[in-house]
Length: 316
Image (tube, rainbow, N blue to C red; front, top):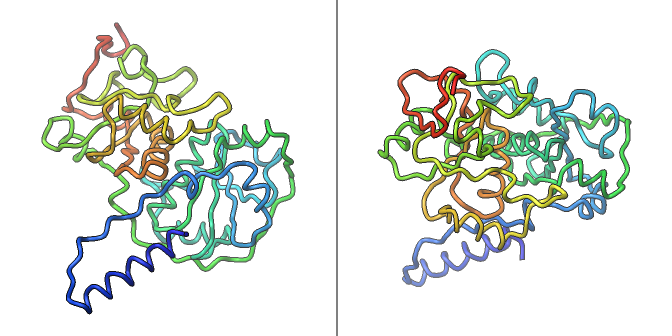
């Protein structure tokens, strides 16, 4: 039975109970699961021609989409379209609605994201689309690499869909953390789990960022109280997520079991979005992305920093 049908049944039962004078406990939200939010390459290949499905590619490598992409996929640039061009922020509600409609998205569309870099930026796109209230946002498990390894076709033909009619909702503040809230957690003034999904060397302060990345902080280390669970912990060799039961146990064994709210962060927010998708959309946990991440926190004056490696100003 679909989630919508279940919701209707729950509402009907509650109405009957109310009319009969019987009180009921508040209904619990039905968590999403991997069958609703993660789609396989087989599923997408089978449903690619469904007019209700809109496929979006968000890749970091310039020119990758133009060299070949999944049939019907629309290119979305995370640096030019998913962020504000002036402020360090995600795009505005109005800009989001314009972007989504241009991609042919309606209110009842199923939006499937995929991309390169293990879906980091595709997951960022999925996070942004959830912030503005789209009802059915999914991620292609394994992303572009898995599609190509499966030998599935790519095309250079660019689609030009008719304008959609989606209406963007007000940004959902429950999906995003800002520096003041993160500081409360760091100072133990708020009972929230902090998950740093960067590499162990980034977390310890041994390095400021992974080799090849330009966005840096002036200080190295991590937010006090954070648990280091690198994003790849939950990933198979082919880029797909490990089985839901397995990742639930992996995170629970490391202290993240969904019993309290979670904030995830990385360097600029893209890898954190990948883990947000897993913990929030697959496992059903209460999770926010701190997209300011280490480039904001590590460049802020007066904030507490944990630096086991002892690296200060680039000198160990």
